[in-house]
Length: 463
Image 1 (cartoon, rainbow, N blue to C red):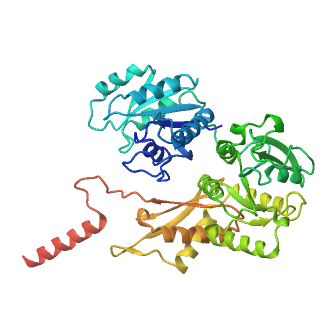
Image 2: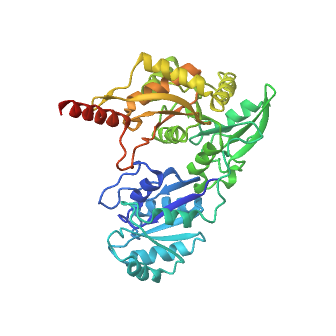
Image 3: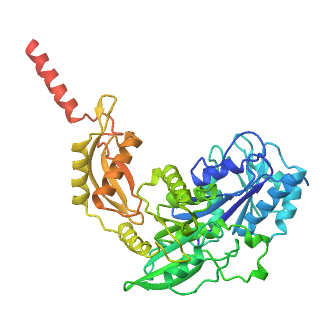
């Protein structure tokens, strides 16, 4: 499992800035104004070969109004899900009473806590750290989230207790790993039972009965698979408010462990905001992906047409993702899912030869040349495979850092179509050839040598 890190602290201490830094995104809204973050926000990050999951939380003020109580509840949920807590304070503001109150709360929660003093650029870090040692935490780090100062050392310390990644966690001996994810009560466990052909999961029409991920090995067409359901067996009488909350962590960890993801949506609700967040996470993780719109049997023709139109309109940017309209309860449309799962897995794990990829690149270049950059043509020479699950193709050439995003998409779509990849994203990386004369003084290029030879010859003729 990737370690889960929760960011907590007062409003406006830089939690969202640090979240964006650790996830290398701009997903969290950042401004010099307190209280912008209220709900939990989840993201993926990686330092070297160390992946992790980050939770951003709202600012804790200690007030007793309804809104602050809700923010506190969300932050406590995040801490409960986390393996370690990053407690942010403001180095420019100094130690405050609110910091002391929050520190007292955190010490009682029995979690590894790293005190991070943010906004320390151009400050005497030793003096700042000495002030905050009064809070009594063993791990104290002075950083600047906005400038990236101190972040590598911070993450080395935070991740040190957790075992390093041991290669692709999704590529095990059990065969293809298929994660079933979705919002509460969309029919995940019912779909698992239907795929297995037996009642392996306890299901009933009540949201929030899912707790822990459950792995179920099975065989389909003589091939081994593992279904990862984000549901755990839980009796109705023991379901409390906390468990009824949608645990995004379980779904995110299931995605990380999977080769193929089946995301289940409720046809009656259409594409919700939570669906969109989950979908974005799957795409960012680069997993093969199939969308199952469930409870299709309960809609009339007008409702079905409306849902199809909404799915086509809102998800048109992932046209490579197969969409199935199913009834997990009655089995309609479910039979075809495993066929695409098998093809998606084969696509994700496919070995690609360098000559084949280079021939496809040459064909793409003949059909559509890269644009000119400052009067010079971008030259792409050859391609080779750089990874699997998802497939990565590395293209070598000159000025590759200037390849426009539109041309990158063109190559990606070309490769996906030419390779007949099913339900699988494909990543294109560009690398420029090294200039053998770069960094060398008093060394002329062959062109300069020839130019100088001609000049000397011309000067001799003129004597």
